[in-house]
Each structure stands twice: as structure tokens, then as C-alpha cells.
Length: 303
Ligand code: ADP
Image (tube, rainbow, N blue to C red; front, side, top):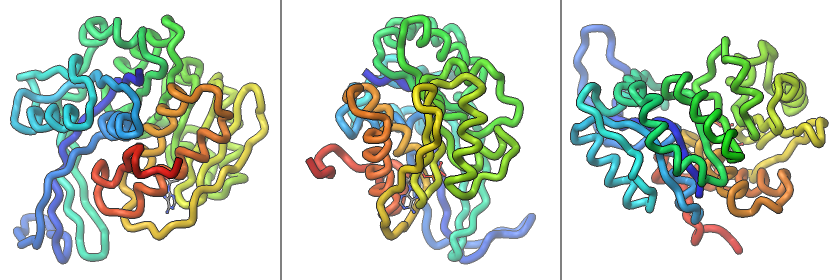
């Protein structure tokens, strides 16, 4: 069982030839609604690979919330702890993308920020039964921290994805992370170092490891990842597949969801092998448009 304690967001996407100016109304040429939010994305990827999954999250008592619950069901994810509230709307991202692929985005986290301690207590049983629990920072950091504490108390492996990054992250997050997985810009914010090359990422990973994580993974887009662990505190670069990227939105979430799957279901694989496989899966996700819609299923993988 993989449990995610995290966010859900409805993406409202308009495609336009250019971005509007203040006060201006323009015509776009296409509109679509997508399922997003880091927690939900990661859960969907783990489920599609064959993990038994449950998501602890909060949506509004509104049509977007209802649709999101249906999306979880279609992906085989347990919604027993998907709460609906009347106090806020389902998290939403209003996104405008021009022909050059530039965008402006407003995110309203809404119901995500209302996921609280009481909600976690109701889900305590499922958290304690998980092989891996994943958390991010799109819900209240206090709730993420409490979830990590609950998981650790029950001996559950924790995969923490500090996204979106906070410069003043509570140091407890590091020691509560079995695996601390972030991308290069998050690593920069957390360490104040420049993280571009694998070598620079290795230095940043060492700084994060010294803060108390057991394993650190920094994803580097087309350059793959850098990882190290308390057992092997020497940075290792693990390249990914060379592919033609069409849309990299949500690649990091595909990677995190896949890594959780391997940690939970193939715990005897080496860390390097798990990362290679997660790289492979995330590389599939960048080759078609959309976020969850580009995530592969178990049947799409070579044996
Ligand atoms: P984020 O989506 O958080 O910015 P990254 O861009 O670092 O995360 O991507 C996460 C993972 O997705 C990478 O480690 C890699 O495995 C895969 N990936 C991302 N972009 C590409 C690409 N252009 N080609 C191949 N794999 C990619």
C-alpha cells in the first residue's frame, strides 16, 4: 500500500495566441480541464504501475471535487480518506498558455489548506499500514509534518517531496524523510547553492543529506538524477533516457510516484535500479501532452 497525504488541483487551461494585458479581454482558441496537484499526480502514477493506493486529501463540496473523486476511482485509488468540505472550493489552477508556450498561472489551494490534524487522525490506520507514505508542500506544512511523524512512528517509509520549495523549511522535515526527493530549483532554494550540473547537484545533495535525510534524490530534468544516502554518501549521477520532450509538466510527480511504487513493491532492488526505472517512467510522461494523461500504465512498460 502506498498512501499519499497531499494536494488535488483542477487545472483550467486556456490556450491563446498571446497573454492578455491588465484589464484586457481576449479570445483564446482552446480550453480544457485537467486533473493536477502534486499529491494526486504522484498517487495516480503509483496506482497506474500497480500499487494499491489511498489518498488522504481534501476537496470542495463542488462539481470539481466530485469530478476529482471520480478520477481517483477510475485510477483505482481508494477515496475513503478524500474529504469534502463546504468551507472552501476544490483547489484550482487557472492557466493561460500562449503559442510560444509561455504561461501565467494563478493557483488557489482552497480546500487543500484545510486538510488538518483531525483528518489525519481519522486516517491513522491506513497510514500505519502503508509500506510508503508520500507528502509534499501543497497542503499546510504543519499537516505534512504531522503525517510524516505518524508514518515514522509506525515504521512506514517516508518519501518527502519539498514542493513548492520553502526557503525556511522546518529542519524536522529532513530527519523525518526516508527519501528526500526534489528538483534542481527546489534544491537551490533549500541550500542556497547553484544547482545546474550533476556535479553541483551532488554538492547540494550532500548538504541536504547532512541535515538528516536517509536518502537524497535531486532530479535534473533531461539530465536524470543525482542521488546519495547515509549508507553511500558519495553522489551518483543516474542519467535518464534521451527522448523528444513534448510536455514536461508533471514529470517530477511521475518520477516521485514511480519511485514510491518501487520502494513499496520492490524493496530489494538497489536504490540505483529504482531510480533508473523511475527515470524511464518519467521519460515516458514527457513524450505526450498533459499531466496525468501522459502517465504510463504497467502495461506500457517493457518486462
Ligand atoms: P520537475 O517536473 O519537478 O521539474 P524534472 O524536470 O527534474 O522535475 O524531471 C523529473 C524527472 O523526469 C527527471 O529526473 C527525468 O527522469 C524525467 N525527465 C524530465 N524531463 C525529461 C526530458 N526532457 N527527457 C527525459 N526525461 C525527462
